[in-house]
Amino acid sequence: MNRIRTLLAATVVALVGAATLAAPEAKASHEPVIEYETRGGFVLWNYQLKIYSSGFTLGTMTSPRDPGETLYLYDYISTRKLASLRSALDRARFSRLPATVRSQYTIMDVPDRVVKYRGKTVTYTTTGAQSDPVASATFVSALTAIADVFTKMADEPLVTYQASGGLAGIQDKLTITRSGRAKFERSMRGTTEPAVERQLEFAKVNELKRRIVAADWWNLPGQFDWPAGVVVMDGVSFSVGVANTRDQVKTIRSKTAADEPEGFERVMEQIYDIVHDLTT
Image (tube, rainbow, N blue to C red; front, side):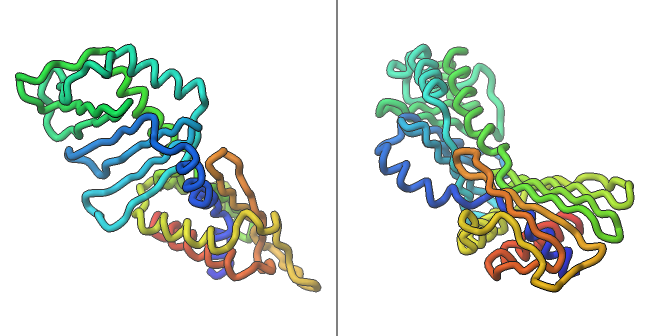
């Protein structure tokens, strides 16, 4: 069991480097060029998005069911992508829009979408008053393009873990996205079990990030081996990859009974806890 914990732990990696990069980039770019957020609605979470002139993108997710935790996401978009978003808002004549616009038809329990651009804020709602003007298709298209930036960032892998070997012929794979969506796949002796997908609690993801930072992940060696004179038969080999905001991945490989530092083992313990939650 301890070895399974170690291999699940070692396969972690993808959540950390972002935090250390975020603050300098945000300061360097001063105020965001575009801000976007969702408010209200019958949803699992709301989110905010800030895009800076450097392309640095900061997202935050909050859950009405767990208001004590916030999940932070970081990424970059290209200069061309940022220019296209600005052009989309300009084509929608954003500067001339009223403070509130609505959908053509009333739709309940859908979050309002709020955009701030060039010092002006506009809210798009699906439950507006009849006196509110209907949003143009051009503006709705611009909103969708901005929302897609968050969706792409949220769906990118943050941690990827893979393990193989052992007497059981295990083949495990765990993927955690930036938004905390986890997918766990396992096969043993050629028999594939149904994949498990679930949204992780923000607290679990944040703790994983803290442990990755504390382990100084990006300065750890790329592989851990057995201590001198130790040989383990039928052990499990595994790898963990962690992605930063530039989509660079630091992968660390290890195996059963390898000589691993304490920080790395603590990351593994958190990963094991996540896998346990997904499989029980």
